[in-house]
Image (cartoon, rainbow, N blue to C red; front, side, top):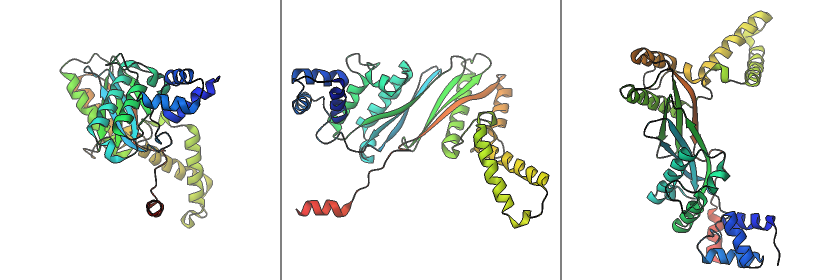
Length: 314
């Protein structure tokens, strides 16, 4: 029985096994999908057994930063239950994936899954996920990642609440960072990462805010002012000034460098950077940051107790 690339993809979707494993299974089984699924299960490759269509919406965000702080990565790995996401086995897998991303810089998740794990030349990342699924007994998946490198800067990370939120930040430096300055910058970067985890800024500064977002916000503000009885009768130029003032306030709220520093609200993030720059004699700035909230955008599993009881009573 012949089979096509679509059959291979369908078997992969059904079992979670790698593409080459699926192709081999179909070849060995003459293209018979049922036999190929059993072939994979017998070899411990398949995550079938009903797991392929389950919802993996729990999990953690893991981080890895190189010893010299020039490379870092975040990786979100998902499981079906919060209980499993807190297990040593799952956390070890998540940390392995984060390290692999940092050391290999894949272009996307699919590329990463096909790569040979950096600390085990015999297994791919996909193999590790499948093996973890078989061992733990829940559907596991590697969802997304963020990679950063800056040979003349400092990369730092922060993981909040055991992996519920992860932050990766890149601090740019205009001079080479020596051994004395590195721990100071890393400490500041960690503090700013904690701030980002808590306050969730959308952008570094105004230059990163899309003009479409500003125009949309202006439209909302204009409607609010026009519908405000207190603003009735105000001339157009006054209304425009009111809009500009509120837009300025809005930008300060969503831009990281203008926010009041979480650990010391008497200063903004900009002031913190200026103080550290002056102290170290190095011009420091925030080049970029990534903030992952575990499970954001994923469909959450909803248990129906009535249905479960009905099933048990049959």
